[in-house]
Length: 408
Image (cartoon, rainbow, N blue to C red; front, side, top):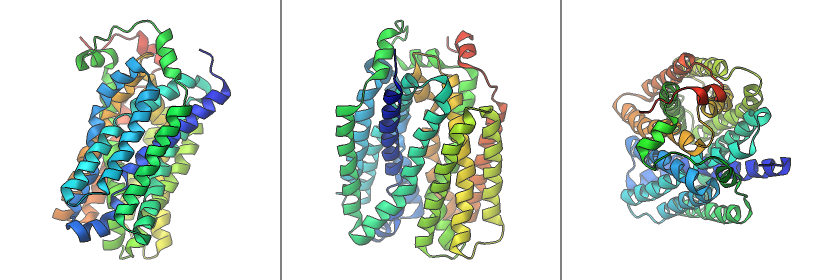
């Protein structure tokens, strides 16, 4: 299948835009904690549960990956964007906390489409020489979405109210889905048509046997730990800044934006690094520094100025971001050709588990102890993810495909 440079660029741009919206929507509720607390009596645990619930649908990534490998990635991608946006808009009509949860569940089901569909589309148009760059740009879109959410959602809520904020950003996503449906090509579907017929029998067990291997188990554990760390920063940085640093709540949202901005720059840089250096070593080094830096910001001298708070977390975000394109290269290498949807769907289920468990667990820890203890755990999760990556042996895709399957 011939892919022109123009096809590659446009596909990467559209898919990155969808990834931007995906992660933007994952962070729509934390910037609204003030008005939601006032209206619904929301606690830290309740906020953590709300953020966790929006990740619940991500547990569907393996069956959605099977769907991608059957009908093509474009259809699943467009449906995912539309459903995720619609769920956020639905939350804007909520009259109770349960209404917010219902909208988060709908949005979470849509979220299950992104990783299997996104990476299948990218894999279909990307060559060996620009793999790291493609993954880097794609993940940059995610963290740009994280960085934009506190400013955009919080800004609209401040000037109007939280309902208008959710309805506005939800409507924008539905519109983007319509544009993608009309303009995006279907390279992965053509790739499937040209590939030999799959022996996947259609069940979850069959899908697991297609992509399962011991390194995949390690990657699942890696994604759980890394996601719990990053979700902890995303959900509770504003709490740390206001209660421990003693700075205004607005500085907390700005600090979170600084973290995501730093991560975005780190991801773009990491895309170049991933094409040149051993991905595993890059991941281990970056996460070791991220964990140590988080401990320093938690247990060291308390930042008394907004610049110190924002700058410190921006540095942590940058170093963490360096690891992400290398992370995606590892996943690509352990995913057999023709099973990209199932492979990325299975491995990113680890991120779903981390995203589901992490915020609720850390919210409970925050309510039971202090946010300082919470961030010590966040640092421990960074370090644990680095340790798992250290234990993972680097292999090429050809070596993985030649190896016996881990299924039975």
